[in-house]
Image (cartoon, rainbow over all chains, first blue to last red):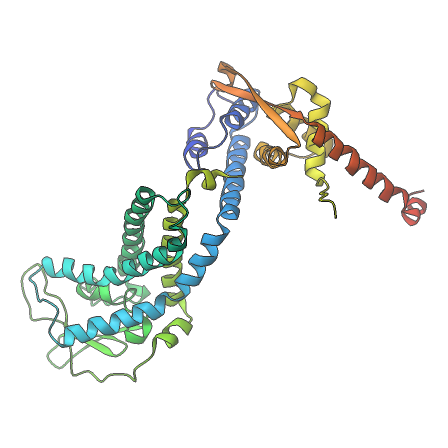
Length: 286
Length: 111
């Protein structure tokens, strides 16, 4: 049975999920056909086809951003490797503040996400700088907005990649029957490249004192002394043997699930930012 | 060398449907004609995409009608084939006819 009103979800998608909204006449045609007896399934199919066509058209109009985003995101593991080396050296030299919880978690997260964000913004700068002289295409306000939006998108995706695996203990997060070891999560699986520990198999053992010991590649974290909530972060064992040093180039060449996921994150974030930095007229061009 | 681009199959069908409908050529009847002749569902979105593409080439033009309540207050977009579009249709037909006529083997097989 066909009601007088077309399904609301595809209607909403048509109005909001195509760049500039789909042609109102096209939406009117779909409504007219639906009211003449077409089924809700037909309306859904038509709406999804419109979205797919709009999406393909947008991608065709943003070929340059796609190519540049793919190229730049390929370099991401190398950049994160360098950032990890610098952070680790700063930590070893005692240049990183030791703050009480929860400031320690915030500080740690900021240190973890900052290199990634800088990489995205550097990509934007490299791509947009040649357009500086072209006053028709370059608008400070629009670029500023895309810089802010890129930060939000990056934080959402990166946070998801860091925290979601911890909800699934079998996926390799450090657990000991008492929940995930959240205190080491932000620097373990995603932000630190595989050469420094991220993306490696995480193993959990116990030492002679019965404390939990988490091994992540060449780093070893030991459970802190018992304390009331909030639990203290795991302590890095600085006496752990170090692996042979890798190079940024090796990090760039690295294949595997996490490096690819890292690249995909940067690709999506950069593509979104560059997309938003382009004039509306170009985004809607057929 | 002259810049000549021939119409694709779907574009040609749409132009013929627009010509057939005359002043009543908007999305719904165009899609219905195509469905009737092709015998399968047609995406109105793909019809609009093809028409937009042809409009950017100057083969069709469009104008808006009045909004009507049965269409949710949305106006119809009427399409017309331009002179350039009509020339393109004739040119494509000429080429296709010429190609078809030079298929003796196919003629014998069909006979």
